[in-house]
Amino acid sequence: MFRLWAEGVSKVTVLFGNPGSGKTFLISKVIDYCVDNARDDEAIAFFYCKRDEETRREPQDILRSILRQLSTTSKQSQTGRIHRSLRGVPDRLEANGTTFDIPNCRRLISIVTKDYSRTNIIVDALDECDKDSRWELLEALAAITNENQGIRLFVSSRTDDDIQRHFQKDPIIRIFAADNNEDINLFVRQSLSQDSRWNDLAAHVHRNIESVFRKKSEGMFQWAALQVKQLCQAASWNESSIKSHLSSAPKGLDALYAIIWRQIEQRSQYERQQAKNAIQWVLCALKPLQTGDLSTMMQINPGDDVIGPIEKLSDREIQSVCGNLLILDKQLRVWRFCHLSAREYIENNHYRVYA
Image (cartoon, rainbow, N blue to C red; front, side):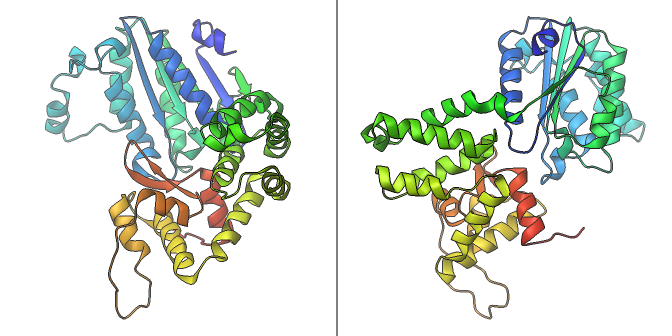
């Protein structure tokens, strides 16, 4: 299916999968392929939607980013040159009392892409786009694709009803648990082998670890990634301790998140409160928090009359205190949930957020 899209036979292809099944990882490989194989007169735009960031879930912001990336070909993206049709556009829009809104972005994308032999637009996690307004993005992408024969659209999403209905006539790739088994085996081997203790384990222990990951992950990369982190943080790495850890590992993401939450609850009152403060702030903050901000907020408790000395916590300390439920976006240097499913677990079971 992907080959047909890459060869230009299919204009639109959709990747559907359950939470944690590795859709974002596969989308990153699609992007890498397009970048590596782009010709001089081709353009590429990609976008990773994020429900917990306003600028990464609103249709207008997504289309603005796509337009910006398509303002030049892939090979000229570092030169600063932009398509002639876009020169002076901000001034003209301002003079007309308008902005880069959805209709203007849609119109301009259609104009610039007519000069490219092929345009690849790739959108990850379409389901994380604002549910009340994502129909605007779907309609805009459909119009752009229909207006230009050279445009190819590749998107990933959970199986939300409205998104499935929209793409029901297009080629669809579905990720099933069995499809990921070999990839998860490879991921586990590569990740755990980075720990020097891996080479001290017997071959049959390696095989047992891979077997448990394959069976209990149920095809979910996110489950495997969290369990790898849990295992690497274990103080003891012998056959008995690893067997004990893996035998107690639950199936399913929610069950795993519940265990991590119980581990947080069992810590000292000070660390437990720090973790809960961090999770609540990342959940509710109006903008993503950097390490300095989050470190400060973790140490201020609601209801305290006196604020004690504030210490600067390291990235590693924050992630450890939070049981890997939070991770640092190394590119943007802001903190976010390790996965949308982790945020959903917290919202559904511990801290409900009301609009």
